[in-house]
Length: 156
Image (cartoon, one colour):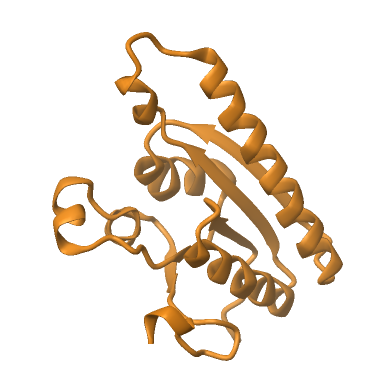
């Protein structure tokens, strides 16, 4: 019997890499008749540089995330998916994507765009995709190419 994924999670953050992962996730979900879980994590560490936590910034980030997820949901539905859900969460994207959500939502495949971080940035910030690969309890697919399996023009 062939491997069938039932619940596919794709992390979207507005980047070109996340867009590639989303497009491939839609196709994989269609082939598997799987639920597609769209996830946007608001990194609360970004607000720690503000002298006092500014709830207006958090509200704006949440509004933007919800708007973006609605657009992704609409696109997935137009592509023929019937089981699409979305989650906006707050905290460390690495931990939430790798550990928390897969456990809570019974995810069996995580799809992520390859990060654009250089070696120095990875050293200080750390790659979300690298952390997810090492810590997720399920399969992880890092997407680097478009639907035709070609590198995006700016990366080739």
